[in-house]
Figure 1 (cartoon, rainbow, N blue to C red):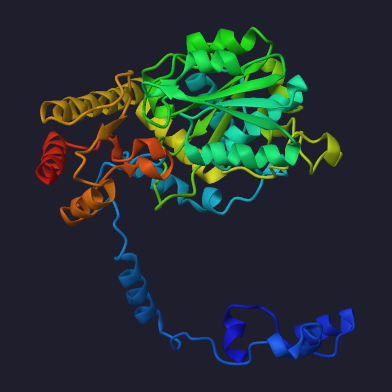
Figure 2: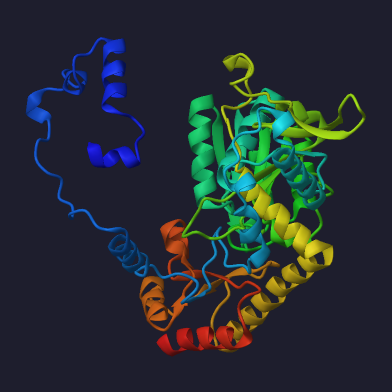
Amino acid sequence: MANLHRYIPITDQDQADMLATIGAASIEELFRDIPESIRYRGTMPMSSALDEFSLLEHMKELAGRNADTDRYKSFLGAGIYDHHLPVVINHMISRSEFYTAYTPYQPEISQGELQAIFEFQSYICELTGMAVANASMYDGVTALAEAGALAAGATKRNRIVISRTVHPEAREMVRTMARGLNLDIVEVGFSNGVTDLNALQAAVDTKTAAVLVQSPNFFGAIEDLAAIEPIIHHVKGLLVVSSNPMSLGLLETPGKLGGDIVVGDAQPLGISQSLGGPTCGFFAVTEPLMRRMPGRIVGQTTDIDGKRGFVLTLQAREQHIRREKATSNICSNQALLALCASIYLSTMGKEGLREAANLNLQKAHYAADLFTKRGFELPFSAPFFNEFVVKLPTNVSVKEANLKLLAAGFLGGCDLEFTYPELQGHMLIAVTEKRTRAEIDNFVTRLEEMA
C-alpha cells in the first residue's frame, strides 16, 4: 500500500479511523459476508508493473490497432460522422476553467460556464426554429426517448408511433423508455426510403401521443415533414423530429414545419468521433412545453446592480421536485461537448455552416451519381443530404466489401442487413465535406472492381 500513497491520499491512520467509525476491525471484515468458496485468492493474469515510458508505448501500440480516420478515409456515417474539426475547438475546451468545470450549482462563481451553456441553447433555438432549448442531453438517441416520454406526459396518452426510418439504436432506446412508462410503441414502415405516409395515417389515432420521425433519416433521406405534421396534429398529438444539425444549414427548420419537439445529436458540430462517443444531444420545444423539458435550462437575468447574469432555471427533474412529479431523471448535461458545438457554430458563422452543409450535399450527390454511372443500383430516389443507400452486386457481401476496402485504406459504409434484414447487400454510405473528389472516385472504383 505504501507505493499507492502517491495517488490515493489515505494514510494508514486514516484507514484505521474510518474502520473504527464504522465498527469494523479490518478491511477483511468488510467482506466477511462473501463466502470463502467464491473468493479469488490468486493473482490476476496481468503484466508486471510498467514504468511511465513503457506504459505509454504499450498504450500507443494498442491504440494503433484501431482503424481511425487519421489513417483511413471514412465513408462510414450512420450517426457518427467524419467532419472537419476547427483547431480552435480543442484549444478552447482544454482550458482548465472549462475542462474541469463541475455542474454550475453556484451561479455566482460559474458565470463563464453558464454563459457558454446559454449560448449553446441560443444556437440550438436558431438552428431548429424552436422557442426554447435545454442545456443539452447525453446524446441524440436518449434525447429522442426523452421526447417520447415528454409527449406521453403532456398529452396523457400512452401510444407512440415511430417510423422505421429512425435510427435503429434510437428506436431501441425509445422501446426501453416505453417499458418503464407502460407506453405502447407502434412502428410504421417505409417506402422509397422515407416514412410510408399511408401507413402512418392508418397508425395514428386519438390515443397517439406523438409521431417520432428523423429527417434526414437513417437512410439519409429527407422526410416530408409538411405532410406528416397534419396527420398527428389532426388528433392533437405532438410531432417529434430528430434532425442532423449540419443539415439545418440548408434545410427549413423543423420548427417552421410544425415540429413540437426537435432533438438530435450535436456530434456533427465540432465534436470528435472518439471511436463512437461520447457525443452531445440537443432538445428544443415550443413554449407551451417548456416546463416539461428534461434536464436543465440556463436563463439570463440581471443582478441588483443591473448587470447581465446567468442562472439555472426550470429544473423539473427528480433532484429538485418530488420524484413522482419529475419529468425525467436526467441529472446532468454534456456541458463540455455542448461547448464544442457552440465554438464550432461561432467559428463557422451562418455562411460557414451553410457552406459546410452545401459541401456535404454536393459531394454526396456527386458520389451517388458516380455510383449510378458505374452500374450500381440506388434503391431509393427520395431527396437526401449526405448519406445514401447503395445496393452491391449479388456476388459481393457488404462484410466482404468492407474488409477489402479497409485493406485499401477506406472505412466502408454501414451494412444495413444487421438492422434491416430486407436490405441484405445494401450499404449506407456517408460523404462529408472532408472527402475529396479523388477519394470519392477511388472509393467507387474499388467497389466496382469487386463486382
